[in-house]
Length: 304
Image (cartoon, rainbow, N blue to C red; front, side):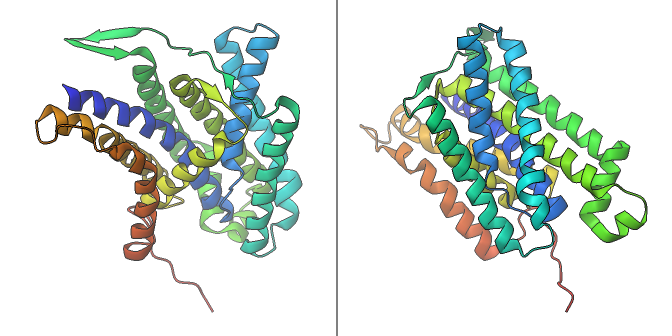
């Protein structure tokens, strides 16, 4: 029973990582940019929801939808102002710009709301009984809604005209232009979708941890980036699988003390939970050493 609770917890946080990792993968697949400002869009989405609920007393659902729309518009704006002028520049220039945008967003929110953590209301309070198990509503909602969103995104990319345009631009930007694809619109749409997914991920994350602060997107964004690399950055199924794997492994590490004590193998906890974050980045090193392209990534050769 204990292991089932740990597994459900891992699926919940893994679903959040997967939603955020999808944004990394989609943007990288289109313009080969690791958008390190993506983690801070998560933070902006959380603050937007908290602000409109606390200041204007907006109900939870409209506030959440407003956050998704706001973050989608913010993602498009960032692409137009910061990334589009550098589209023909080196990847290093884009990377430095992404870091600059990240710092700008953090400091802008810090200026407006200060550094004090803010309490976030859980949209999904209560519990659901599944047999003899008492499972929190936010766990079931996070897993179910994330799964539905991932299925919709997969169908959008595979079977819609904008999805075909995204795949065409990802495959060959110049040829896609010659075939009549509006590259600028496609890239903007990709940023909008990725940023909207980040907002959804932030809502589920905040419902689980109940506090928001200007630096909250840093670690969450980094873990989602590792999930994208694990699955093969640029691959949608890879981002989903990578997020789920990291979430489940972290949850098992955090719950290992409980499992070992329950089995009678140890008498007192070993504080293994403190190593859960370290595990994520050790995993990144292992991936880069043994399989740099990730689980679903494809080896590519650069033409010279």
